[in-house]
Image 1 (cartoon, rainbow, N blue to C red):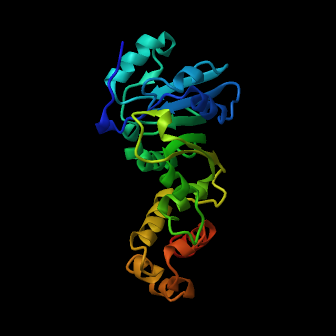
Image 2 (spheres, rainbow, N blue to C red):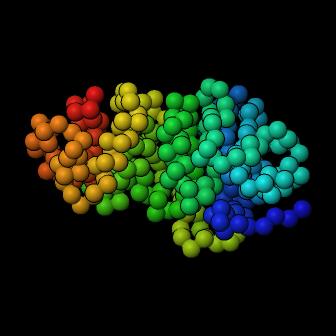
Image 3 (tube, rainbow, N blue to C red):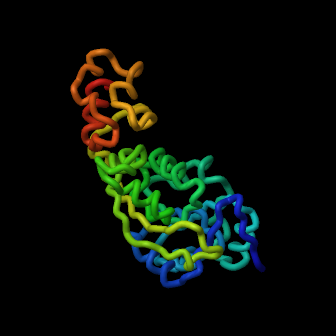
Length: 252
């Protein structure tokens, strides 16, 4: 059976087996591990994931046609595919699990916010992104592309840009460069107690990038906080540790 590509779902399917094997090879394989693939599509990396020994594998796929194709092509996937939108899904496992996927580029940022929701359970994420997005998330303070997801992902995960993937490795070739990133859970190293509050704190700081932190946080922080000299800076000048320290000081 064949399947069709759906532009509305941002579908670009990997067709280079060497790249597929290379992506799967980045996974820290632990016997007995639980593994979730997001957006298996036509099964490009799925066929290698299901060969991994002693792994409890599941996949989330929103496209009914692809689910049907995968079931027919790989009978071993019976009862392993959750037909649902990843952004609306509950955690697919009890306990810890790892995540891998060629993420649809039109929802790659929301997927990372989902990983932040699931962070207490997620040991590792290996994901394919638009290269520009991948580099942004991996960037440090002082960079023009350093932003909300850079701070939030780096507060909970080590972020490692692994390698580029050429456009011709996909069908259809995307108009953008691609890159693979590894996120390794650091076990909440900054002891952030209220993640939701911290996320809002960081988002507010970057919502008006060109303004100083004083202007960005005006109305959300007490007057004594706004008189702190650090408030003369802009959001991209603060490190993850700076954001955590200010959050703990003024929004405990």
